[in-house]
Image (tube, rainbow, N blue to C red; front, side, top):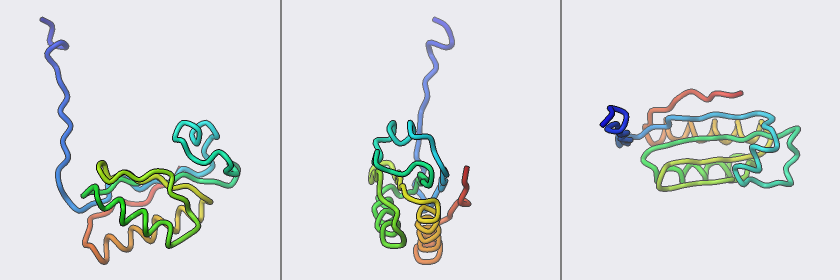
Amino acid sequence: MELQDKMRIVQELVPGKQVTLCHIIANPDEVLYTKLGLDPKTDYTRSAIGVLTISPAESAVIAADLAIKSSNAEIGFVDRFTGTLIISGSVSAVESSFTAIREYVINKLGYTCCELTRT
């Protein structure tokens, strides 16, 4: 038996209060919207997709609530089991949502938070 046949990958989540990814994709290609199952009526020339991961995973529900209350961003996907949140809207709406989420989880919940990045 080869070494490759014996290899296995173990993925582990260490419980903590943290945002591990907070990224804005400005002006994504239309195909990315389609592959993610986001609203096909979006004006792709002035749009953005925001991707955030947070733990504990249930915090994604709080982040989604903050996202829609702080701007005109729309929820594309939220998963309370993996802590994934995907939002879409104008670049400024997605940035406003993520700024509000970061401020809340840092200042009110005491989370560790990564920097907001953008491509």
